[in-house]
Image (cartoon, rainbow, N blue to C red; front, side, top):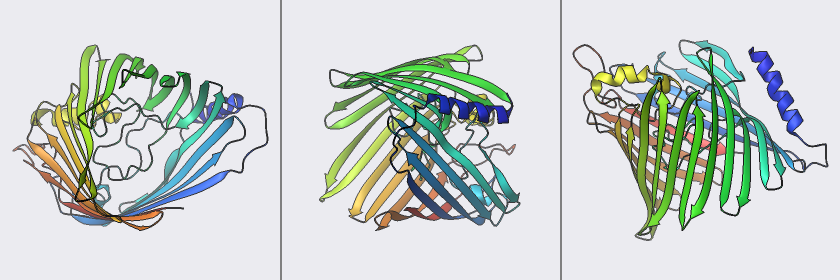
Length: 395
C-alpha cells in the first residue's frame, strides 16, 4: 500500500472507531523541550568533536465523552562539528529502526553538520466500551517486565543506555484491551510494520493477572510474521522485586530463546533513598564473541531495533542515590560478558524548578577496541569518552 493510502486508512479507522459527537472537555496542550550539549574524544569509528541536540515536542490530549485523542508532534535539530559527532549518545536523534507503517516523519533539511527532522510520534484515538477499550493509530505499547534488559517486549524497547526516557515512541497498531477482573487484563495487538520496503505483521494476544501475590503474564502469536511466545513474572522477595521474562521465537526457521532476570530494591541510606537494579540477559539472537559482532549488528533483528545489546550474555546494573532533595546521582553499567567489555555511565541530575531539570554525565567504554583486521574487538571497548550536559523542561 502506498504511504498516502496508509495515512487515509489510518484516519478513516480513527474516525470510524470514535463515538457520535458529545460535549467535549477542553483539549489539553502540553510541551517538552530537551537540549543536550555533547563532547566526545576520537574513537575507532568516530571522530572527536562537539555537538548540540535539541528536541521540541508538542502534545495534545482531548477526551470528548467515552473517546479520547492523543497526538504528539516533535522536531529535532542536530548540530555537529563533524558529520559523525552528533550521534554520541544513545537514544538521541529520534526512534531507532521503528518501522512505521504510516509515513508520518521526515527530514526537513540536512547537511554535513546539521539535520532538522520532524515526526508525528503519536496519533491515536481510544474508545472506552465498559470493561473493554479499543485504540487505533500511533500509540505507545510496552509489555516489558524487567527494567533495562527487556527481550520479551516486542514493541520498540528502550535502549538500556538511553539517559532520556521521558516518552516511549509510538507504533502504528490496532489494540483491544479487556478487563474481565480487577487484577486481570487481556490485550490484543495487531501491528503492521515496514522495514526496507518489506511489510511484516505482528499479531499478539497477551494475558496479565496476579496469582497468589505474583504478577504473571504471557503472550502468544506472530512476531514479524513468525511464531513467538513469552512468559513473565514479578514477585516480591525479602523486600525486593524479582522480575523475569522469557520469549521463544522462530527466526528464519530456527528456534531462539531470549530471557532476562533481575532484582530491584529501594534502600534508606543516611536518611536518603538509594534505588538499585541488577539484571542478567541471555539472548539467543546476540553475538557469542567479538567475531560475531559485525554480523549481529547487520542482522534483521538488530536492524528492526529488537536487540538491547549485541552480546549474547549481558549484565546491567544501575544505582540512583538522592544526594539532596534537588540532587540525584546515578551510575549505569552495561557489561558484555562474552567479550569482557563494559560501558559506564555516571551522571548527576538537579531539579532547577518544578518542571525543569539539568543533567551532566559521561559515557566511557572499557575493553579491547579493534582487532588486527580493523573489526571491533569488543562491543563497548570501541566507545570513546563522551560527556554531555542537558536541560529538560515541560510546559
